[in-house]
Length: 251
Image 1: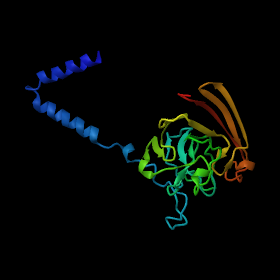
Image 2: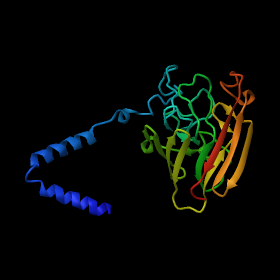
Image 3: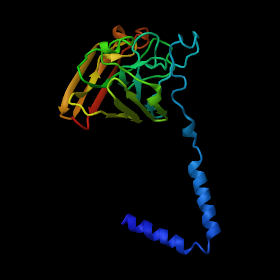
Image 4: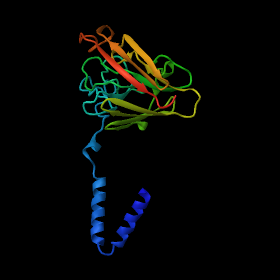
């Protein structure tokens, strides 16, 4: 039905060409100009300010400490890559870091303390199972992976990167109350998604609960009190709990 409708409209336009050629050309030009015109959202570059450490910039202050991932205005989810968990790295990501731990669902930009949130870390891996993150200088010591900025795409509401050690492409986007990730794996009989409930930025969750709802769904929570870092490396004197409901499209 839709194909027939398009053909009819196309032929109708041809029948009127001789009578309204100048009008058609003008309308077409206006439409193309509108389509090619940049919208305000096209000028957003989430990677700006995404640095937390000054060794390469030879500066000690003024870092944005922003995260480059996907979020909506005032949304509950800030889905973004994590290159670091400890130190004065509040956003969990810094541009000069050469390796990546994975992707978590809660972040804050411009955090002045030593880090908060960064909960529910997910990492696509292949091959030998590693159960710890490892260290940046020796990625093989854990499940973290090297990556290149050449494969990064940062847009408003969308982030993509290839994890080089696994040759897995990750694509991230967010809705106001949910985050969506698509992993594209190479052919392998040992592909998996690893989830770290304890890990967070600037601390750890001290209690976790997980329930298998069905073969595609899990749900649970992570509690982060001051003794595990809480807010502001524990100085906030308050805890928080992150509840999650996670579905997989493929086992």
